[in-house]
Amino acid sequence: MPVPETIAQPGSGVETDTGPGRPQAATEVLRPHAEHAFADELAALAVADDRPRPARWRLSPWAVATYLLGGTLPDGTVITPKYVGPRRIVEVAVTTLATDRALLLLGVPGTAKTWVSEHLAAAVSGDSTLLVQGTAGTPEEAVRYGWNYARLLAHGPSREALVPSPVMRAMSQGLTARVEELTRIPADVQDTLITILSEKTLPVPELGQEVQAVPGFNLIATANDRDRGVNELSSALRRRFNTVVLPLPASPEAEVDIVTRRVEQLGRSLELPAVPDGVDEIRRVVTVFRELRDGVTTDGRTRIKSPSGTLSTAEAISVVTGGLALAAHFGDGVLRPGDIAAGILGAVVRDPAADRVVWQEYLETVVRERDGWKDFYRACREVSA
Image (cartoon, rainbow, N blue to C red; front, side, top):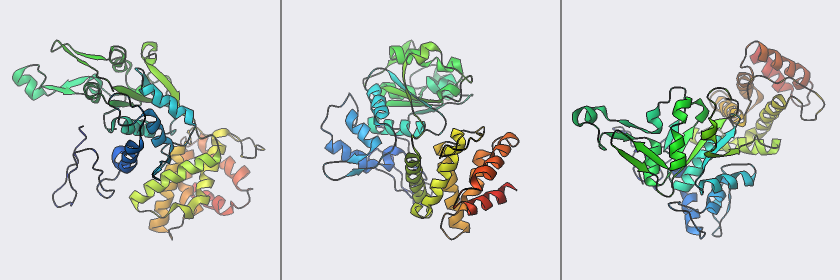
């Protein structure tokens, strides 16, 4: 099964890895694909998995769900959770991929849509790289196919001159394709998916041919519901998807757990200090984000204004990671209030006029009066000056 080739630079000491099942060392790439980073877990699940598998799936639906949610196998292998949230959401998503309906992961920014999409594709197909990144400039060729113009001009239209898109490759090989930020793609380009998802066919009129999907093919798309009005999905296209909404973490404890786990993973690759020394500050970041997001303090006593940004879990992860880097390179290696203050300010104050007023009011009415938060208050006042 093809995967992108890692090109080694002369003298770099980096080995070329062109095949699945040979995970690259963490020092070779900054961010390995999911199927490489968690190759041992996927292999252990494949050995222990004795349940029926859909055509061309690497694992059964039960094993895919276990890979995402975590668990302990009979041989003692611990599968780390990739997604912390309601089990039924993951089960519905996995079951959808086992049918002929495509999967749309919907939610506000920062609810792990891309993360879940990548790990689903890695567990189902062993390849998460068949990706179309949606932008306002995504062309139709990115979804259907393009041409090698040198061959096209020299020999005319032919299969050799055709450049398949990730979606076409997934159709012909029975794999899972991914489309990120579907609602950012222009509407006319979005609708090229209708025939693919309904007829499981991609016509190539220039050659008088078509590519028909083989068993195992499906598609995962992501979209955030703050983007309504950018490029709304047509009703015809939306009907081709089963929509699963990924919610924000239900409780502060769940969000702290998610942030801690993800920061630990990022910290290992960036050689940052251990997270346990900064758990109190992680809890503080999560508390600030949740209160501003919800418009009320944790105890429910004080109503506060919310800023214009989403203040998602992904942004909390970014703030803590940045704070750990500050602590490592310019501090004593322990995450402290001063290390996270600037990151929080940058996340909250997106609109320099309106959001700054919201932030100052929150500092003076909530943070200043809270026991044990004096150092944090002073650090935030310093960076806000």
